[in-house]
Length: 182
Image: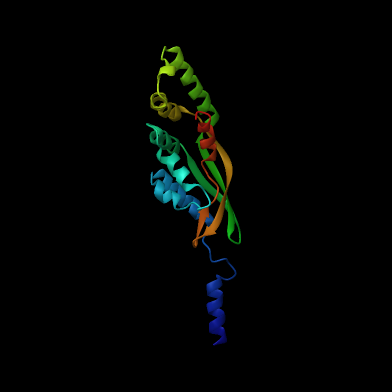
């Protein structure tokens, strides 16, 4: 009977492991959902400590052409988990992120605005929606031509609702780049 109890205890503890899945899998599943355009599923891998409504709003876009730009950016991105470190209910997943060069994108957007003004387009007479629509139409093409950069990002994770959840906004760099135009 004692041996049976020890065997059950060892099995339940996973022979010294935490019994939790590898947090890298959550990052992989998150990115697969993003690439598939299933933003609701992707958000389900994110912690409730993040402003999920704002992230969803940014992904789906409220202005004409925003969703197309998001789709173009994501199409040009990749996220590959390299290693993970777990400490209790927290983990860090070291991830290689390839994305369009956001500094170059901002430069190109300013050039585009300059070209619009030089062409005689009276931006002062246009609504914000009209300006955004004119920009969005051309930005998708610019994104497709942008060089990519690869960097390492530590994605912080938390054990929440019996699953690893991302608690670092992986789109922070992209959001910061677009904040310059708001």
